[in-house]
Length: 275
Image 1 (cartoon, rainbow, N blue to C red):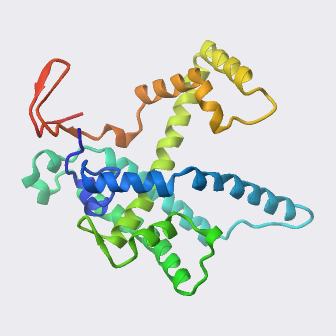
Image 2 (tube, one colour):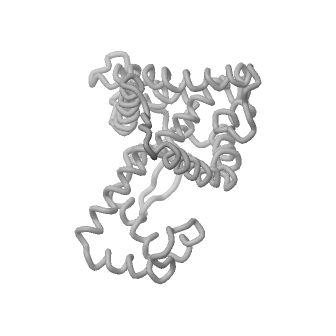
């Protein structure tokens, strides 16, 4: 199973550097390894607790008799603009583009999706490119501290800025990977959580069962931790069922058979696209 070539990957995925929508192959395997070992490893994820503690400290230190302004109107407008761009990316990643089925009519852009994809790609590149440039300038000035490294610093250390890897420019790989992690951690997660809560509220008996499981294995004196997940089998089943009923948009992307096979007793030749 792999993903076929698509307009979304071409125009919004940095011409294939966005491995979340890319085809299975050496580049996909390498980027998956990088994401697993360098970007999403336990040591990186544990930094989240430190960041939250730092946030609580800032709130408490600035919350006694002094107003603390999070941002100004310009930054707020930028945030809303980026949010709209991410939502547009998620929507356009899941639409059916006729040129994906009939490639030679792409220049007609009968649905207008290609134009929207190009506009969305330009918008997102503005944000991701500015973040990348900030990191590059900070590193050049020697201001990068070891404890302040984020995933862009890691990617710059691995790929540099002006190199090439698997036919893609390093800059495109870094931008695409950043966009990959941001998009995967924003809209799909929020949509899944919303559907899960909605389903639980409409099935009170299921809600009661999962509450009992949490009381038994976690209790009411602390938050759920990663180590608890293996014991919460009922909660895992709820999440899996939610994903089955309401999968996030990009998961609906068509697949392509890498070789001749049988699916449900039906013969599927190599290269067949199916949902």
